[in-house]
Image (cartoon, rainbow, N blue to C red):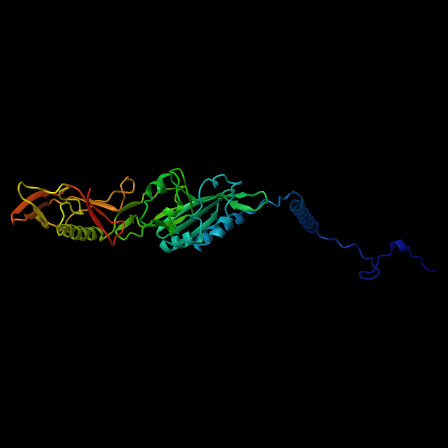
Length: 360
């Protein structure tokens, strides 16, 4: 008799007839995928929902300041001004202040005097940008505030210097061709001491077409502070004293040759001399120096500064000379009178090629 076998007691042979079990995936993979999905959702929510398009990233601030400084270095006034906040954004650029110096030509003159070179531009805290540059040999450190305009573009609260009240009104003297960085100062038609001018950061030099005058210092740097007050002084140029000494000698000697009671230099007699019972012959008049000398090579000629009410093209000196007039009468008689020259005489060198000598 055959023995029956209970199927439930049968064990499968390993590898044969075994149903496949579900595969087990690592838990960390699901966690990683979930984190990535959450991060992407958060970024997209910020970018398309919470982010303000008008809020620039920090590097743009520094880029704008670099653009501004590079425009100054390139003598490009239009590009430099385009980076600055307009009047309605920054009331420091006032329509009441004049802009004749905000030009390519002024910047070109500045860079020819002392080139502007960028040293560093770094993003500071918030909307601040810290920059360093040099103008010639002078180092300048400046912090800039970058603002956002109504159209969401950026602008710099301006970095222009402002001339002090008396700089031009007291300094500009007529008739000597004064100019600053090529801008003729006399042509500005300055109406009063309260007129002010905007200036780009850079080097500035005041010059004059009168070769006997010089303006010192030779240059000043604007931009190191908001106020531009370089304290320019006007005086004789190197060689000016010698030129005046030669002119004084030539002028006095020419007057000594005049056959006149009152010479063009101002010395002499306003009322002709007269003596009893003789008639003087004017054609016999001669003048001579009996004390002192007409050699003025060691004389110091004094020129008033630009704040004086006197013209800067007039130089004063003390001759220290006594002259004598000799005249004959019609009968051959000789007559002489002496006269001390005034303590002060003046040379007018408005025209350096035609210097005139006169009694002050």
